[in-house]
Length: 400
Image (cartoon, rainbow, N blue to C red; front, side, top):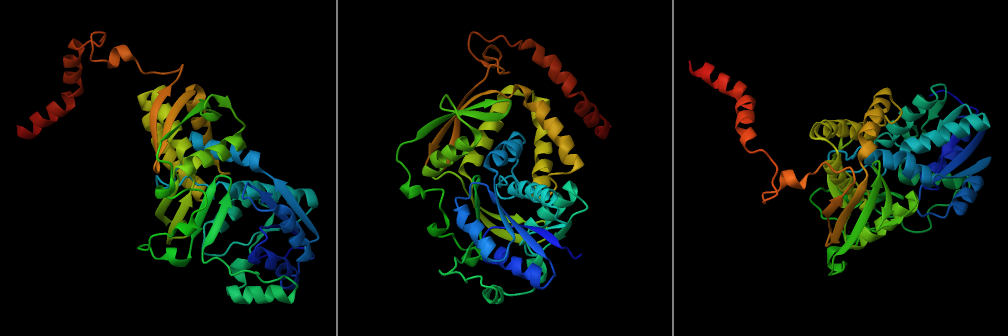
């Protein structure tokens, strides 16, 4: 770990990032700590967080409203790639990290800092995402991670902070570790560390229990233009508002809960609970619209790309050459993915019940079994003979 004189610290207002401020100055000889809190729609009051940073010893406390960029430049790119890590997790937390890293690098360059810092421990994925993203954006910046090195327990960390005027948490801390932003919530730790234990209702905040959901289904029509959602129920709506509204609609019907054993990049398995109502509905709708507007070969090839794309986001490689190349492929596929998808929300399910597009490749006259059928049935026999010829020759050879 190289020494630094001026540091921009990613700041959340919690115990660890608050203690990072005096720790960097007292233990590592940093002269000036500038904090940066990113507003990604987590619902926190950011003015008290900004003031807490100053009281904790920061020379300057920055707050960046990044909600629109978070949705347009990160979430929607992942949506166009139908990004689901291990085919389940829509990367709501992981997507925030490259954006925060970008804000840190920009602030460091603006304020002449020679390092950036974060409060990640050595056990999770976020340390990798931050470190690698920062190195990609500015390889000359040092990256400091005090919580990865200080070796203090939770109690010792709180006590250290109190020595420098940082108050200990006034209420009993939750047994859970929770990360929240506009795209969703991730919950881990506490009793959830036992994969056999069912999550209590108290862990959820964005989604209703099935027993509490409406007894009548609700339909929502999502309009897409080139793979980007632009409308709900026929009304054009801005990106942040669209995500917020769809979170409410889907969450009200109990849609969006994920309980999974996840393979972390650092080599361990972690039991994770996620709430991501809007993202899950959007990915399902977008994938369905692609099935209507993309040719079979593009659809099938893109599925393999999507798996790689999801892994790259999860593994902290947002700013990498392969990710940029895959972006070009994904963007090309989205040119004709425009139309409307109708979703039925009911008792924890989001069922696709209708889709339409001016770019539809579906032909009723070819698909029908009725009198309007235009498919040439006689052509099938010759096609099957040619298609099956390699199999026929193989079978004859092994029997000779």
